[in-house]
Image 1 (cartoon, rainbow, N blue to C red):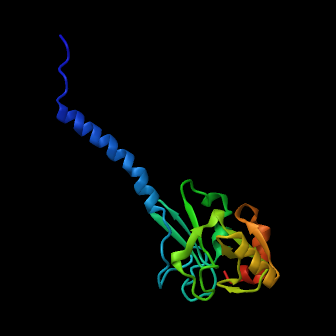
Image 2 (spheres, rainbow, N blue to C red; image 1 turned 45 degrees about the horizontal axis):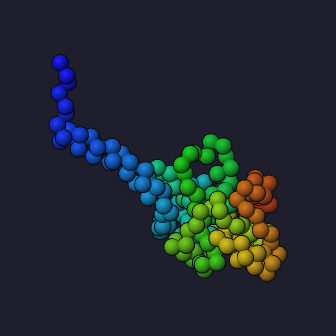
Image 3 (cartoon, one colour; image 1 turned 180 degrees about the vertical axis):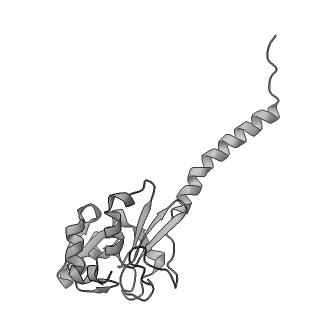
Length: 174
């Protein structure tokens, strides 16, 4: 005896569930977008209030969790710890070519992994000197030339670079 055919309603419902499952990935991607900084936000590393300091900030956005950092150096130092490299997290920093140094504009948060970083300049940040982040190489090179720094990419930054940015002062502040 042949099996009865499922009614079209059941097939439509099954197809709807399958299509709804496909949309979950798009929702997750939207949840990983940069998040504005707010008064009262604390640095994930040092616990300092973020909004009172000049210079670029950073954040790590994961599924259901946003970690904010008072400087690019704090974000990158945290990221370099193997236990913090979670799959699916996105890292963001301010594009300082499009922001005032004293008041970074959250509308210009960019992918930290694709940014250009200027190290070796003496502009103030939350923990002393910091890495100036840029979305465009020419902007980064212009600042490096004007202030005696050098331009690095995300993959070139390690703990030795970060220790040279803030010196011992940055680590003593923790």
